[in-house]
Image (tube, rainbow, N blue to C red; front, side):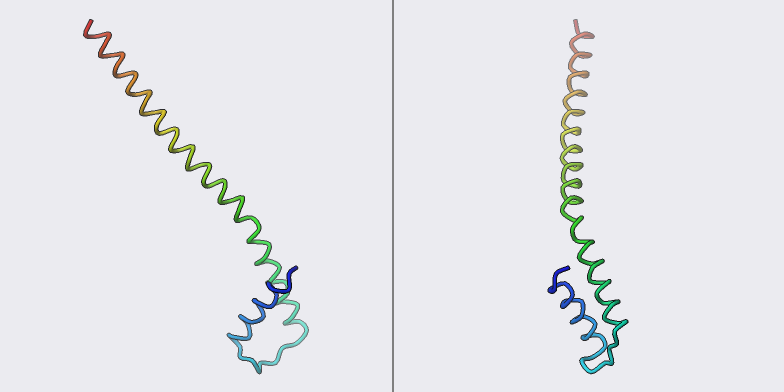
Length: 83
């Protein structure tokens, strides 16, 4: 794990508890675990973002396809019934 992530979480706890708060070994272990969980949670964001963009683009494309399909069906119906 990166030291920067651990330091960020530790600084957050120090901001909440104060700089002179008594910190024991178990507290450092909990901070280290929390920092690992936070860092691990960020790694999946890029894949999740790509999936969201792909689903959005699929929706946009399918909307256009549906519009073109309906237009073609209406056009064919008009041509058939007017002849």
